[in-house]
Amino acid sequence: MVKKTYHVEGMHCTNCAMNIEGIEDDLPGIKQVSASYQKGRMVVEFDEAKVSEEQILAEVGKRGYQAFPA
Amino acid sequence: MNQLFVAFITGLTTGGLSCLAVQGGLLASSLEQQLEQQLDLQIEEEIARRRQNRYGKKQKQILTHPRLALPILLFLTAKLAAYTLLGFMLGALGSVLQLNAVTRAILLIGVGIFMLGNALRMLNVHPIFRYFAIEPPKFITRYIRRKAKNSESFFAPLLLGALTVFIPCGVTQAMMAVAVGTGSAIQGAALMFAFILGTSPVFFAVAYLAMKLGARLEKWFMRFVAVLLLGLGLVSVNSGLTLMGSPLSVTNMFQTVKIAQTELASVLPMPQSDGVTLYLSAGNSGYTPRLLHARADTSITLNLVTDQTYSCARAFVIPALGVEKLLPSTGTETIPIPAQAAGTVMHFTCSMGMYTGDIVFDQ
Image (cartoon, rainbow over all chains, first blue to last red):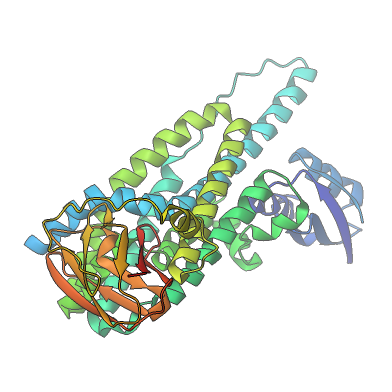
């Protein structure tokens, strides 16, 4: 299990953070996502054996945001 | 029963518009989140449509209509529940819960700063203003997301609707005083319920029509809401400053400039002020005359005359003296004012800083 921080661009309200956190329900292998609209970043705790960083960033991209490692 | 009907009608008429002026900013804040979320959905749908088109699939045109009625209803329901609870407490506990002028002024200034910060955030002035967005605790967002998947975000309108209980308009304050007077928790709750229910149609109609029109304009409307919030925020801060008697408020600065001008005629038939005994009419549209002349270095008596007055002018405040009086809807209330030096300008205002005037000690 690893914990990584990413910058997120494209958030313009607190609902966006909630929307991004929704990936923890959709991608198996993610333990927890904590996104902050105020800080413009998210912290993801995930199992590298089950899900890759690329998959996580792509899932965030699908929701209309751009995430990249902090 | 008759009292409840009067409370409902008061809410439906003066209460609705008066409260909208004071609390409209909070409603705009909650709807703004709804609009932003709707914008997100549209972006997602656009991305999905483009992706499908790339693979040659025909995609039906998706028309999204913001479900604005729901957040407005949630806002009003939370407000109704919060005020009913307040009525219950006021009825039961009497005047213990009444806020004094300084507390209300601080609240007004705080709410004003909150609105200004949110407006600047929406206009993307600087990322620092993102801290003005109410970020609900993570366990709540997680709960909401899982319990209400695919539904609208209802936390903000519910919370903000309930928060209006801390910024009652003048008419609401008058009604709160009546709720205290009932001396019964159930009657106090019923009275506030009837009054707030009365204010709801005006709130709903104005908000829904404004937002429905705006949904078509999307991004432009967001800017419109931001500018509206800016205006309301400034008004709120100004009302707070006026209530504190600060010479920095626009209202007080404007009146100081106007002091040389002639007095307005009184609307109520009242005895003439003679410099020692002053008469001031507190009507539904404010105080007349707005400028009173008093004799310096002498104790004076200020008589406040009301005649079927239901506006917030009934909640009379002289910030410099710490005087706060809830006037009867019809009658005369006497306030003694200690001797003041020549040249003193004493501001008076209603409890929300909406209606104001001055007493000049110069004779």
